[in-house]
Length: 245
Image (cartoon, rainbow, N blue to C red; front, side):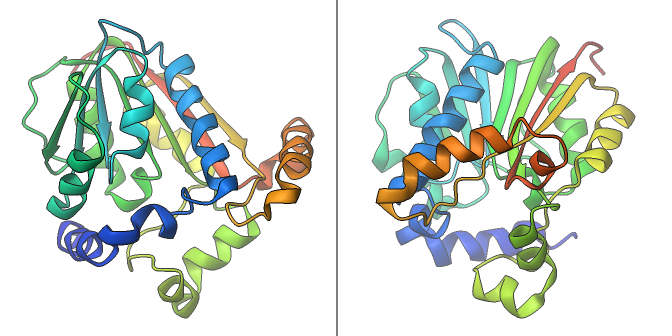
């Protein structure tokens, strides 16, 4: 997977002009999903004024802007110069600093951040190196919190494993999704603690407007039902860095 940075650079150029639509955040249902995720980041990550936050894979800055409402100091990075340019155009908030940077090898000093967050980014990266880097730059007792695609979801499974569908959906060749038990093991092996991985989100971004509230309510009910909740579209991932490297 050594070619991921080059693939992601090319991908960033290709999608920059309509990235949020491609990612499903620009539809009415997508906007509702994005607000819920941003609330997860802020509340579960203890993000508030005075905290230092790193967002990796910030893309066009959609979640950066939402998290910035907390008043925290945010460094937001992405490997794509085109996407960072878009992000800077989209937000002029004083508590945000956008940078072009490879998340697997950042320029930040050890123990810099209170929290590291990201939406749908870990599945683009080499997992062991990125977890090592997150651990390095997190403060003691710092939190990592991400949302990622769930491989047990039938649509996600097909999209990530059938090559022509993967290409049709605009995915890069290497990107994948996660089984929560495998990801939990990787986090333990990287010496994170208090690991919580919760399946959530049955609201599809292309849900018609008149169905959004009903589907969303049903989805939140499904999230509470054993077995059924396991096929939700996304995983909410949270872990603590109790021991610095």
